Image (cartoon, rainbow, N blue to C red):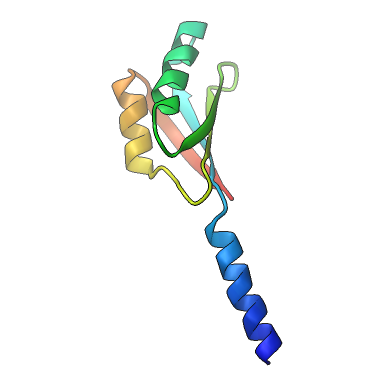
Length: 93
C-alpha cells in the first residue's frame, strides 16, 4: 500500500511539470509575412518555448516551457490583435 501511494504521488509531480503543445486553427493567414508576425508575437511570450506556423493547414503550433501554459483567452487575444481569428484550439500534454 505504501509503495502504491509513493508511485501515485511521484506520478503527480511528474505530470505537473509537463509542457503543453497547443494547436490553434487560425483563419486569415496567407503568406510568409503572416507567419512571421505570429511567430514573433508568440516568441515574445515568456511561457513559449517554440512556435511553428503551417500556412497550408492554417495551424499555429505552440510548445510551452515546462510547467507553463497559455490559456485560451490570451491565445485568442494575441492572435486577434495580430489580425487573425482562432477557429479551434486543441491541447496535448
